[in-house]
Image (cartoon, rainbow, N blue to C red):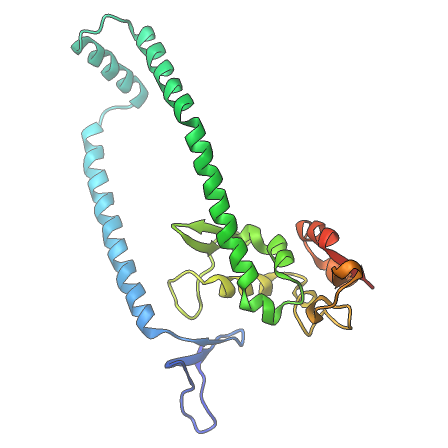
Length: 251
């Protein structure tokens, strides 16, 4: 990665940040302050991981010589029953424990279901809203936000309240301008589109052409959006289903 220079040999600055040119030709405004903060945070996390590992190793030493953990656990359970002077045998104790767990699960199942429904609604609102408000989609893509979501939505998830994207290999997509930090929505989507085999067919000014191209805002019968046959053929299966419902396909 090289520093971008003007014709006079001065560094190019964008929003107070020096601009670098990556090996693939992309220009990146390098956030030095954020990078230092990230390095400091990662160092702290590494120290915490090391301390937890050392503590775990110390605890494991207490169990040296125990080759069958399950047998040891059962033996401890038997001793606990004897110490508490329980009048039920091990089989009865297991039955009572199983019934108690089932009763608790039955009681809280509706609450868990409601929680999961709310969580799904939150994810839909967050990620769906990001697609509908995306400047990258509006400025760069020749397909509307709903088709973009159908094609790339599965790559996004909500983690700790933040939208996180993963590539086809399941790896998080990190920011190139803010090393060590996850990419924001538009930067992650741009990375996914760059890796898409048929990206030229969904980018404005590449695969789209003519008055019927989706990028030009064309509409078909009954006010439906239009999309060219080439664009439709290049979409993923899920996106094709959505396009067939919402768009008019033109040749």
